[in-house]
Image 1: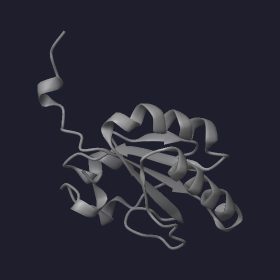
Image 2: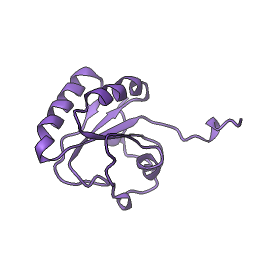
Image 3: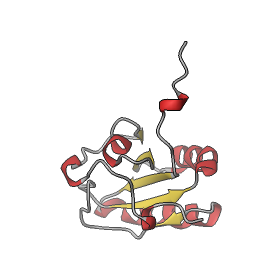
Length: 128
């Protein structure tokens, strides 16, 4: 067995992208409010138009590494039929949204050509 930990990318935190449509927007609003009240996460606003690699309405959640063990199981149990992408924040956006992606529900086909193989700006990382 080889030790691959030295080759693993550094994880700065995580994002969860919660996808919805016009009919489930109210579910997404409630999920966002409940999640924000239950955990020390940073919530993005609900975006009804495509943005970046996300071709459908979504909101994002930013959380620290140590919150993964609480936030992700909660999302698994409370997603109410919404599809969710969970990915790490490394120094490669493309791999984060593909190779390292975790899907709750059905995967959404992302627009990968909108991303670069680089890290994230401060606004998209967990605050200190």
